[in-house]
Image (cartoon, rainbow, N blue to C red; front, side, top):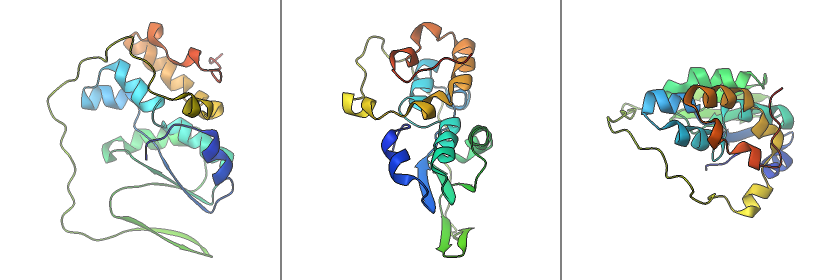
Length: 184
C-alpha cells in the first residue's frame, strides 16, 4: 500500500532476496501531466509516498537481491527510473500490470503475462485547487516516529528545485521533521 520511507521496512527487509516497495511519480509529473497544484503534488509524492530517490536510498540500505518499485504510472517510468538510479544501482524492476517474476534459487526472471484487454487510464481535464492551508498533519505520532531520515533526505535536491520552481519555500513541511538535513 501507500508508504513513506520508514525504519521498519529498512529493518525487516534487510538482505531479502526479493523486495517490493512503492515508488511514486515525482511532484513535477503530477503538476505538469495531471494538473495537480504544486502544494499537493510535493506532499503527496514525497511525504505520504516514496519518491524515486527515496526508494533508491532504501534499496541501497537494505541491499535486496532484486528490488521492485510499484505504484506509479507507466508514463512516469523514465523519470522514476532516473530518480531511483540516482541513489541505487542494484537489480531493479518497475512493475506494471501483468508483470510476473519467476523466483528460483538461481535468481529472478522477469516476464510479462499475456492478456488481450490491457488499457491505461486517460487523464481528465479537471484541475484541482490547492489544498486548504492550516489543516492538521494527517500522520499519527506513531507513523511520524517511524520515518526514516536518510530515505526522506535522499529527495532533498529534487524537492528544493521543485519548491523553487513553484514558490513553495514558505510551505516547506520538511524542516518540522527531526530527520531533516538541508542540502549544502
